[in-house]
Image 1 (tube, helix red, strand yellow):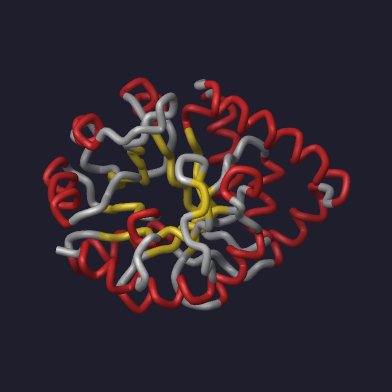
Image 2: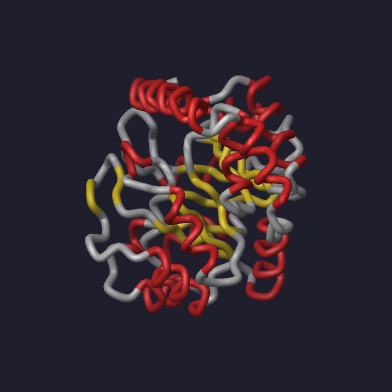
Length: 262
């Protein structure tokens, strides 16, 4: 695990331990199982891909460690509605506070503003977080293989699917991909951002996408700025795209999304 991810996960563990004192797992679990059924995240991606040849997961985040504040006029509700109207398949909402200035309330508000399924994008390391995700309405969680050992990844995966959620598994290299392919989820995301340098390498990501079996749904994450980027990753085998900063930096995220579409 690289230094920055190790620090983020360590901070996340401390945060969880404090939160558990106020919100015990039993209470979150009760709220999670009382939630209305999850919207089909994977199903929405497949349906959009079947209809249009590509599916976009559009991101809602205020800031990131690499660039700082991305969108000063940050409104999860407006972003969600604009993304949905422009043809997004799903939403991704950052809930990590220390590094992305995210809040659970951002996910709740975005999901209530439209009919799209929503991914809780956070550093998931504990089953407590999985219950919290479903209790707030998340339809999918993210598992970052670089942050997890195989046993923990499987435990979190099972907890998510037991709650009816989908799982997006994120990888950065071939070793992580091999580990990810041992998990049941069909959704495999290749993040083109190097965790050590935070730099983007789409060529390396494209090579990794080519290694994903056809029975899995390959998703390109990070570094997508132009229609040419989309075309290159589609040629490599990506069916979905998780796009955030390049859209959020534009005045109208809906227009920006449509410009990326083939």
